[in-house]
Length: 476
Image 1 (cartoon, helix red, strand yellow):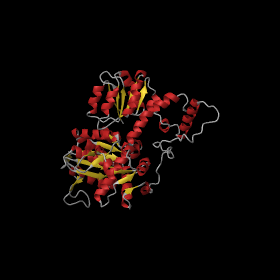
Image 2 (cartoon, one colour; image 1 turned 45 degrees about the vertical axis):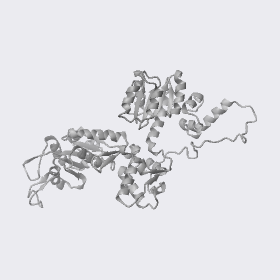
Image 3 (cartoon, rainbow, N blue to C red; image 1 turned 30 degrees about the horizontal axis):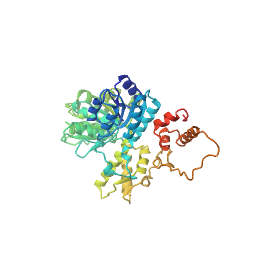
Image 4 (cartoon, one colour; image 1 turned 180 degrees about the horizontal axis):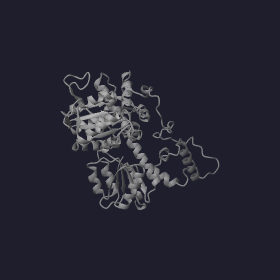
């Protein structure tokens, strides 16, 4: 989540930044006045802005009004002293997330950060209909093209940061790249991005699955061979994959499957930029970027004497670790939209909607097969679908979906309860109204398993009202 802190007191900005990093928020920017913030908005999309009401050049309230005119409107938390309390309360009408009084209550701030992140993750789902139209929900900002019709689809900051690294590799074609990640996370897609973004379209891209060759054949496939090099060799010889990938990229998938002997020869290629064809004593130079990938943990293989440590260090100069899909659930919806759209364009199917319930189900699924499994699931659901949309019933074949506890299943937070004064019965004995209010808050907190945000919404309060009015009585 991209966060901007605006406060003229540098110490408060630093303390706030430290606290946010403890909450695992990594993308944080600090500025000390409103005009600097406005300059940043021209080239940055912030998901959350934490802003002091009193700034030296422009008031926080005016800044909120300007933020509300941005194309990408962030969520906003205002910070104020008690002398600005009325201004802050009125700012709620401007659509801010909430306001905090100084000194800042870190528990409240933590809850607000969590609420903002949850809202950001599900922002694209906030449609009036129970169904998502894939063409209306499609966000071009999630598409990172490396050819005219090939792209990486992501809204994950982790993957976006990896893409930034990939773009820098243009300047260093001689540096090998190691891509780590579980099966199905998109390692070959990353390899293609490295090649096509950093080379011309005419440069060759050669992909080799190291696990598909026996050792005796792999060497000749990689380096090529001279005529008569071995029994059954082509009478004219053969160029190897390294030569075929000259001026381009050679992608060696499942690099950990090659033998220790071949690892030694590959190390020489990387270090000396030369090799020998099988059956030849003439050196061959290379002008090829080497990209390797594995789904195994190489340090463990090194400990078991199955992988050369010096080769690992050579490959480790530029190592990219691709997280699983379960570790970046924010990518699931953009990928669903992409795969549905792709399937529609390649077939006569025109299924353009998917239910929110189905999306929630897919987001909560752990995806052991990662992106490959998600694509197959969408394809299967579309292929055997006889409706105009996808629903949760189209994914019953996914057996190990783990669902979060639905604590609001029987409660509609958006439909307020109307009390009929004609049928409302007062207690027959005297009672303490404040105590009754406290009891209602306490029981509502129980209903929502201690979730203060949902409790406040259910009772028609903003969270600050609930904290300040009932902070001594709400259950912890």
